Length: 188
Image (cartoon, rainbow, N blue to C red):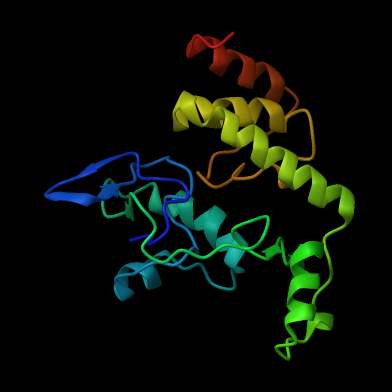
């Protein structure tokens, strides 16, 4: 059960107003955010040698094979935030502003052990997050379809949650597939 609703659950859970269920295919159904896990379930979803980022992507494919068992709170139980993002490392690299904050805090953190996200990618990350926030009223299915369409036009590895549901659009006809999906949802 995710203790931080990023993103929130997709529907209610039986007998609980505080917790909701995350349906198969929903973004970040399986997440490395703060969570309480059933140990056996977690071990069954882990892939050999996967990084935490690979686990979020590939693990979601495995999680989507299960019809139930993934939950999230509606409100944060364990709030934690960076100054500009809800985390300080993206794709294994420090956000530059968070690296500076950690350096100023003088908490004996070895900042040299990993690189820093380039400024252009940092700006793109935050711009993509702003677009994602604007898409939230569409609901998660339409939001993911729009993001997949946008991802075909740019370096999709930096579109937030582009693989979080485990869904990918690959191949030469990716743009046509995305537009077809949007039309099917009556969004064009």
